[in-house]
Length: 530
Image (cartoon, rainbow, N blue to C red; front, side, top):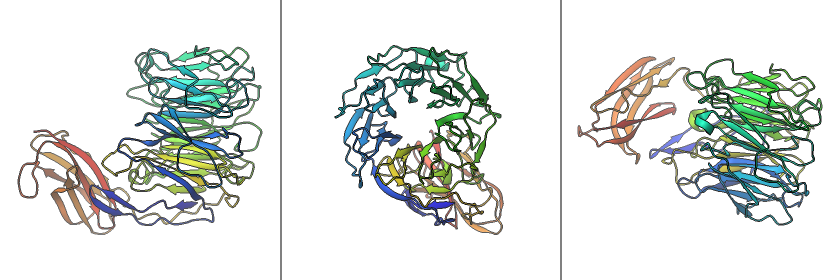
């Protein structure tokens, strides 16, 4: 496995934190060839990223990057050396999908969304920024949360449109399909909704499948990560086979095995990872810290063919984002990319798994995020071949939501595929020396008035210097609660809402940080209400 450093120094709460360097474990390397950054607080650049195909037919594949904060999607044309100036700006910054052709004119179409509408931009010799069709459905507040093009759901030669809304009818959830045609309209041709309120149908992700079972029709996959609602949240994935007259009867269904698995919070068609001629499926379960691959074929079952597990120590939401990576090493097999934005203390990382006839669940490449932007890997996708070197590339988004972390907000990067990447026999890496069970607990009560208890536990093999410090929003040190060497064990301390001089501090949001002498740190927030 190759671990690629993207950065090692982070400024947080006015402090500089230096993380121990990661290391290489194989010959596999991927080079970062392109990067864009947001320019203002709240842009959330990288909310969604996608390879959209070659929209201008110049031989280079192109990419799209969403900014939810700006409500825009930026299109960047591929090139031998890509620049960072958007070539086209579209309305809608929540989600983006490409590689559709709903009017079958030979040009790639693009779809974007905000929280209420979905915008369709038809391809042409020169695509403009005016939406050709706007989709809107009443009954929910998150229409267009997930969107996708289906290659051809009903076999008429036109691409179709798949749109979900988890909030429809008090979180019953609903999915809509609009069939393409020479005169595509915005009236739904197929709908499917959950069976009751608050079960969160389509409360995860949706994706198209390019003929999973070989019957000549494209299919649809619907992930409902929060199904069947509180308090279970096992998650569910359903597949609906296409047909000349598609019905709404679920053809394949599987539910997460345990509560809080969030199985189906992310789903993706993979192309053909094992070379058997059928496209395959990838399902993420961030709550369970795993992802499953199911091989396509004439008979589809619900037994996973490849199981990928997050690192029990460093992953916190493995499977949050999943996608086909394209064929990044040119061996003829589709590859897999999975993001965990919560890993490494919310720094985030991305794992890439190379396809093959004997694909295993071990990562072949790991890319660790830039520590200053946080949540690296919240969005992932194949970028296609943006530099036309014969290998597919990957695009990764990092739209941080903690606005106090930096002065730019959001980032997207492209890493280039190459022919030197091979599936490797992974040996256990020399892990960062993170203590095995060090936990900083949420304070109680929270919010609080006069005082609050902060607990933490240390699993240490030898005494270690420990500090527990409270900071305000500007990063100024307010109160040092602990500053001493401690053995392994459980500890608690009380903060009385006063600073180091004994003066009561004002109501507001504060942060408390536990740090060890080897550089590892944990941060949580608390609220003081006078």
